[in-house]
Image (cartoon, rainbow, N blue to C red; front, side, top):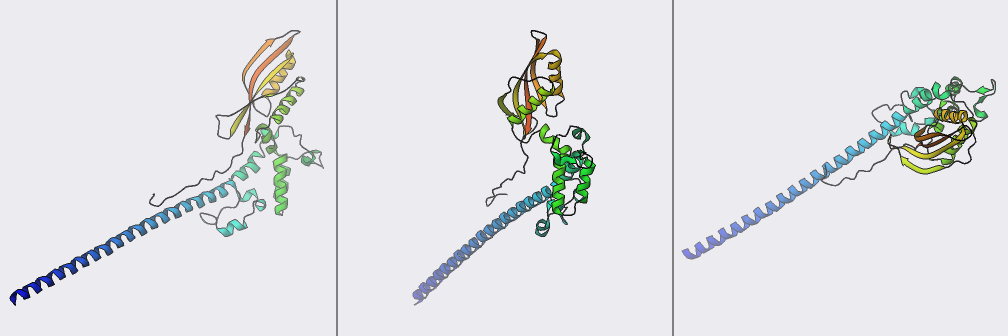
Length: 289
């Protein structure tokens, strides 16, 4: 009898131990799953926080670009709201409302540059004042801009400033794209003004990226002039004073027959490709910081 009671006690103890082990195992599984879920959600929260932070940086960058260019007036807060962007119309904003911006500097400071404005204006009759039969002055152009009452009038006055003020010289001095025909036409005009007519004109066709900036490109060309001394010197002088920059890299001058002076030169002209805002894409992965 006592032996049977002992056996039953051992069986109950063994069963209690099994239940305890199962309970500990179950608790361990629950705790492990809970820890895994906590780690997962913490990583997810961290990833989403990084994404939101990068989105905020992109929004601030776009907002700063809009403000610095002068597309819209300054935002009421740190960045533009959707309502402010929807109401923004660049054609209806005067430069006085966006002082210090790129747009204001171009339409005010560069457009009034006396050195650029001193270049003779040979544009169409749209730049001619019908009352004075002279080209519009910057003050007159600015008067049209200041007196504009509608966005259409403001836009028209802005285009008139671009085509009739000192700004008109910039595309001639530094074109916005590679145009060999325009380059040769500029050279031909210099030759004709100098009293010399070339037999032929042709660029070398070599175009390279200049070292002054990522948007500045160069176009090589060869010059050959054979004329009397006075004419050849006039060609050199007019090239030197041309609004378009011709950088002469190598040149030889020698006497020819019949009192002629022969010029052989290797020169470089420049053009600027448009500058644009570069959009970048940033890929983010879970677990990256």
